[in-house]
Amino acid sequence: MFIGHFAASVVAKAMRPQLPFWACVGAAQLVDIVWGILVIAGVERLRLDPSLPGSPLVLEFMPYSHSLPAALLWSLLAGLLAVRLWGRAGWLIGVVVFSHWLADLLVHRPDLPLGFTGPKLGLSLWNLPALEMLVELGLLGLAMCLWVAARGKAGLAARPAIGWFGAALVLALINALPGEPLPPAGMGALALLGFAVAMAVAGVVDRADRHG
Ligand SMILES: [Zn+2]
Image (cartoon, rainbow, N blue to C red; front, side, top):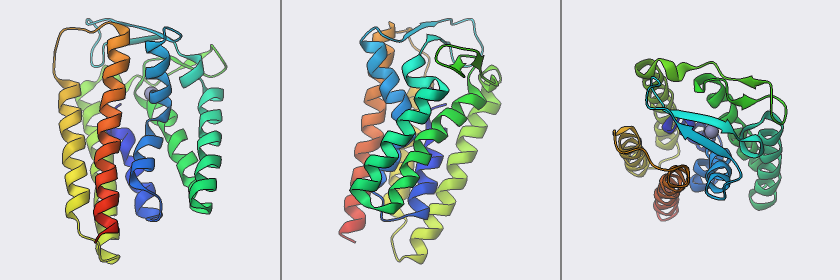
């Protein structure tokens, strides 16, 4: 799952417009940001198996980013930090961070450790790539409708939000393009670059909203 995670960011922003959108976007991918850094550092491990349907990722070892206890800890830390920065609405940032693990549970093959290293869970929607993509796009599309409606009520233009949605779709398209398989560190770096772009464009939406 890539852009589907952002559905939680968009719903959080629609519910609590005082939260910066860039933070909502980063929160949905915090677990994968940690994963990208640890993969580059050689701490967490993956390999690619192009014979698999859908995502070729075989995520062999990722206890610090994607185990249930780690995801809960990252959610708690992010939530506490967000409450400090933005007041009580910040708790929603923690919820968005945890939504990543739940969405991964739906799509991953069994690679998400329930404890630190196992037993591993995953409902394997990746094995049905067309349906998986439909679920991702459907979730984000629905969330966008909610957000655009909430923006309309608050007197904010739809355009910045739609612009971010367009950028997210372009990132998803690039992500889905077939290409030469990258080494693990390259996969981690590419993921971090994608998240940085999504957060930067979200920051543009924040600016546009501030300046009306
Ligand atoms: Zn993930």
